[in-house]
Image (cartoon, rainbow, N blue to C red; front, side, top):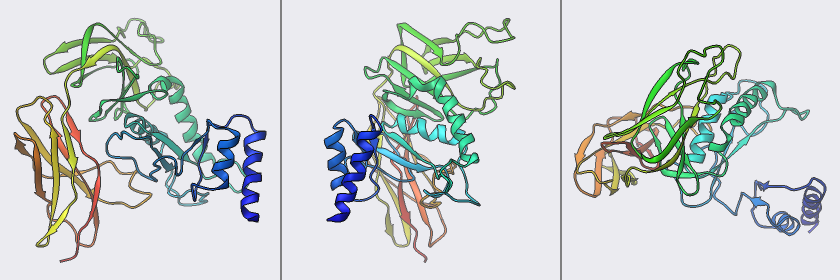
Length: 362
C-alpha cells in the first residue's frame, strides 16, 4: 500500500538521520511498518505502544510487576490549547514523576507545542523547574526499582536494584524553610551497623551564610521505625523559597518487615446500595489491622490527576486474612466515583489499587 510505503520511508528517515533514538511512541495501531522498520534499523529502541502497557492520564494505584508507562499531559489536552488550559504546576509534575518511579513505571509527559513549533512559555517555565529538581535528585529517579512499599503517606520510596539503598522523596512540605530541621519516621526501613544517610544536593556539613547551624543528617532506630532528622540546606533559588521535594538517601539498610497487602475488589450494587469489596492478602506480621475505604467523585479523564483529596469510610478492626465489605456512604446518584481499600498496620498504611463505580439514580 502507498500509505505503508510512506510510513516506512518516514520512519527510516527518523531512524537513520538523527542518531540513536531511545523511545518511539506509536499513537495508533502498534503493529505494522512503523514498528517493523524502527526495530530493524535500531533494535534497542523501546516502543511504548503495543509492546508495553501505556495508561493515559492516570497512574496505577499500586506498583506493577510488568513494564508500564503512563502518558500524561501538562494541561488537559494533548495538542496546543491557546486559552483556558489548566497547566499542571512543576510541583505536581514532580510528584507524578516520583509516584510513577516509586510504582516501577515510566512517566511520559506530553507538551502541546504552539503552531509555530515552540513550547508555550507557561509550559516552558514549569519544565525548567522540573529540570532543576531532576538535576539535584536524578539518582532517585534513574535506574531505580520499587521499594517493599511505594510510600508512607507523603513520603515516596525508590530503591537500588539490590534494595540496599533507598531514596525517600519527601513531598507535601512546600513551606520547608532553608535551615529548618524536621524529623520523619520510616516504618518500612531498618538500619544496620553500616547505615549512612544524606540529603541529595547538599554536603551535609554546612549551609550557605549560616555556618553556625548544625545541618548533619541523623538517624536512630527505635521500636516504631527508623527516626530520621534532616535539615534543608539547599539554595536553589536566591530567595531560598524552593518549594519542591527533597530526597533523603539511605544506604546499607534492610526492610523492617514483610508489609501488609490489600486488594481492592469490584463494587456491587445491592438493593440500591454500593458495596465496596476488598481482600486482605498479607497481615505484615501484625496481630490486628484497621481497614477502611477511601472514595471521591471521579473528576474525568484528564482532570483526575489534579485532585489529591479523598473522603473515607469508618474503619474496622480485622484479625484474619480474607474478604471484607463496606457500604459506600450516601453519595450522589448518577455520578461515577473512585475508590480504594486502605489497610493500617501499626507501622504504616498501605493502599490498594484504584477502581471506579457508577452510582445509579434511585
